[in-house]
Amino acid sequence: MRLGRLQRWLWGGFAGLAAACAAARAEPAPVRPNFVLILVDDAALMDFGAYGGEARTPNIDRLASAGALFTHYRTSPLCAPSRAMLLTGIDNHRNGVATIPEVLPPEHEGKPGYGLRLAPEAITVAERLRRAGYRTYMTGKWHLGSGKGDLPSSHGFQKSLALDASGADNWEQKPYMPYYDTAPWFEDGKPATLPADFYSSEFIVDRMIDYLETDRATGDPFFAYVAFQAVHIPVQAPRSYTARYEAVYDKGWDSVRTARWQRAQAMGLIPAGAPVAAKPAGLRRWDALPNPERRLLAKSMAVNAGMIEAMDDHIGRLIAYLEKRSALANTVFVVTSDNGPEPNEPVSQRGFPLWMRMNGYDQNLDRLGEKGSFVSIGPEWATAAAAPHSLFKFYASEGGLRVPFIMSGPGITAQPRVSAAAFVTDVAPTLLDIAGIEGAGGMTMTGRSLRPVLSGAADHVYAPDAAIGMEVSGNAALYRGDYKLVRNLPPHGDGQWKLYNLAQDPGETRDLGSTEPARLRSMLADYRSYAKSMGVLEIPEGYDPFRQITLNTRIKILKHHGWALGGILLGGVALVILTLRLIRKRRPA
Image (cartoon, rainbow, N blue to C red; front, side, top):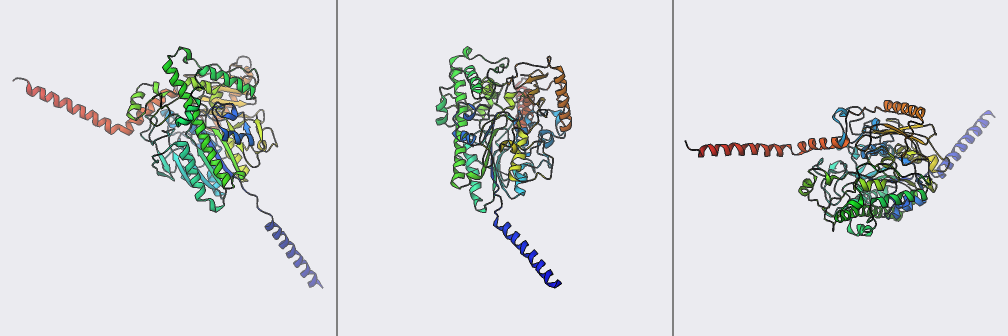
């Protein structure tokens, strides 16, 4: 009797377990989404159509209309630190890329956080996704090192085509500044040669599609990091795109600056009536320039808009590919910029025109932006592009930090305006959260997942009293609620801390330091706490990033061409000696 009961109990238990297993097998596992992370280079907040820009960007706008368009997202003011934070979710001083090598002062060389290569403990989102079974790809600008263990293939990307430089020509494999002696492209960790018909935006997307197609049969989800060169110097675009904007910028930068400020208010990017940022000192007046110079400058900005539209067209090809392969509906897109618009105008710098001629560059107006053409928009157009905000790339003012940020895809509620604060370090933890992957191992991320905001479950992830710091090469900021503490170094800053209420004054026009001294002291204490915990080094006395890049470039030139310069010098000395000997021989005894 007891045995029978025991048998029935055992059989019942087995039956229940079998039923549970069968139910588990019948219930499909959750489908993990694909990810496409699109990074634009030097795009201002209002450069895309969805944010009120002049350039046509229907594909980016399509993603924005179906997803969440953020209006208060901040990055760093320089490319490599932003890219390192984007990929790791870790502050730039902790992940190893505190600044860029071009502006690194010798006092900081080799110091913790300033090695300018990703620290081994700073595990990228690509590596974390790869470990979880994702296919991982990267195409475009890397700028995080090309030494042993530095390229994408050592940081989680199974296939990659990477440019390890701050920029390069978009039509040919050649450098864009004397700091580099070539355009260092690598494929899967090995030096790569570009095709003869290369155009950067097209080729970057072509190669990404190749990677996706080659491994499509595996059925595994993918992470695709697409890092465009647009719109970094040299600004270049096919003639067909530039031609559409030939007349758009003829009235000059003040006209564009005012129009963007007005559109920003109409679109709700800033409060109605909020003042536009003051213009930096020393800028040229449009109406004081001779007509040939105005024509060149107007067309330079037309090339800039054309380059943005060309990039958007190629983004459209990637979207179309995913749609054709029935992968689009399960793909999360991120579109953002590494920092604000680029103000540098290299052509006006001493010696640069000679370097241009030696490297096959000119500024022929008729074919401006095409192969062999060197274009930059300069500080006046950068000021207009950054409107209604203050300053531009390199600086910690809003024009350098506040950039577009769009997320679209499964699980993301369509939201035409997301006013929640978000930061570049939030992207990696957000993607991992959406994928259902724990961020175990390696260095702790400093960012937060934005998933509650994206799903509509919350309207913010940072409390109003949360203090968020940022520093690159002495330019620094700390956000706390509506308030911002900021310091900018010369030439466009004075090195002094200033306090602004961004809810009322997004253009940073009214320093509240003297009227709210207690808040200034409190936020300065928060910044110092941030700097200490992250390992921020004090900037050397008299440091100027633009003078530093000149010094670092000269050192690089000597490294690249020291043997040639030495040969020329020795040849000159030999010629002088030979000449003196001939003179002595010809003298009468």
